[in-house]
Length: 311
Length: 324
Image (tube, rainbow over all chains, first blue to last red; front, side, top):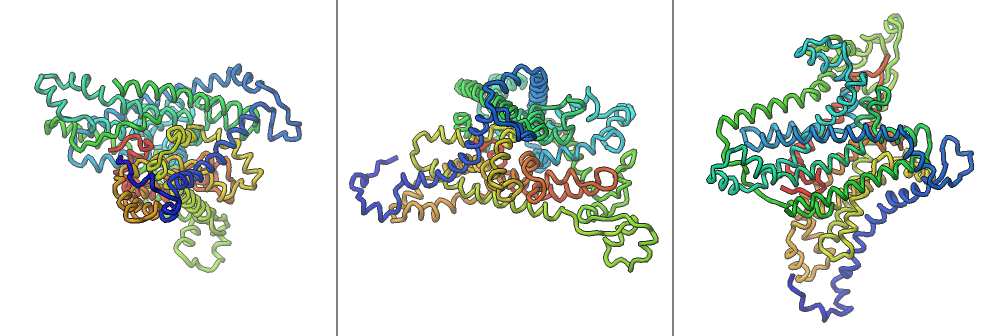
């Protein structure tokens, strides 16, 4: 920027004429947002950290509040149940994100061919991800009902298996895949949209050069398309992984963790501990562990992402 | 994440694949259309279910063809009581088409259901939090975009990191805090909470949009004797209008769709549609035609917004990290 010549000569009077100083304006503009976030996010967070060292239980609030040190954290980290929930969550995150990447990237490659009407069909494909996950979870329970739902009938049409012989949400072997399926239905378009931007950012001349060098389309894909789309793919994976790690709404309505606890993601465990058993101290500790996990993993991942980009 | 957001601002209108052959194009189109049709079927099924009668909705095997009826919508908006046929025969003749429809099922309308207040809550909380988030977000985004702020990157990251918390985790201390402040199950409480969540998105998106407006415009205005605030109002804001509108729609969609906070922090007064819809029950379980009718009405604005937002969708879903 060109240094302003008038700067040193600026007097108090000149300030007045031009209104508030830039510095004042900057802080006036930022302060409300920061204040709101401090009040609604940070203050409660600090409070929660304090609570995580206590035995507070809201259903037994007559008990004296006692500081229990790290007991809650030790309880959680040595509890096999919690580890199983974390495992369930990890499996859900990995399977659904992987499937979304494959489908999303595939769709992006196809749409990038610019066939006639691609923009209309792309909009149709994008619809599921704009919906409310809770509403989606709710209406998929109808679609997946063994008898009255159309899903089983459709499967039976293609495979001959009687529609009432299996239940997508009620069977231990199928339920984990059901949440992956519905999540993928909803979010594959998200990966697709980001990948499409990645593909469109690859300049034509690179392909033209490859063409001159007689590189096969297969070779072009592996040496040009994929490497250049990787930063975009990684960004999509980051966003999806964080969101799915936090997943609560869709699964809570679709299976509410069942059958048994086969689809009980860690957010659902947290909700039960905090809002059904009212073990506030314990669930605060669990919430902090989850937050540290997401935050830590996201930071490591972003570092890796930046390295890939610099290459 | 800051760095992630800083980069792929690659703009390209060119198509990356060197001219695909017409056959390849047709195959690609066919596959995409097939996927689109499969992906839209569940939604179409729900829209259709809203027009089914109770017995058609739970028929086995599921009915693709059926006699459409508005019963689902009538049931959604009313509370009904079952009566004996004798009792109904003695009543004065039905005044309206929906009275007639309900009486065919041996029922009488007892009053309006809670759907309208819930819908109104969704609207008030949605628009209230969107307005606040966009207002605060525009100010903060302008400051981040135009002024040198110490630790700007850290502050921006802080603003974003508040989004990484699982909502259930955030809800625990908020629940306690709101209990102390008497904000539990109030619209104001939900507006404040959704504003806090939305403001991070608003700041990030709007900073991107404002960054794209050349500084020269404002500087010219400043030279002409405008104050900063005048320059913001008369030069920057008119240029940023599209960006602000897109951001507002994203915030509105978030508040509209949000479920976790709503179900944990509201129970009646301030309840929005998402926690309400699954609990629309009739005689013996969920009243599927009414649930489907509510879902349809709830989803229609989202579909319209998606079409309107098409160009900015990518930016919105990646917090401005990817721009086309």
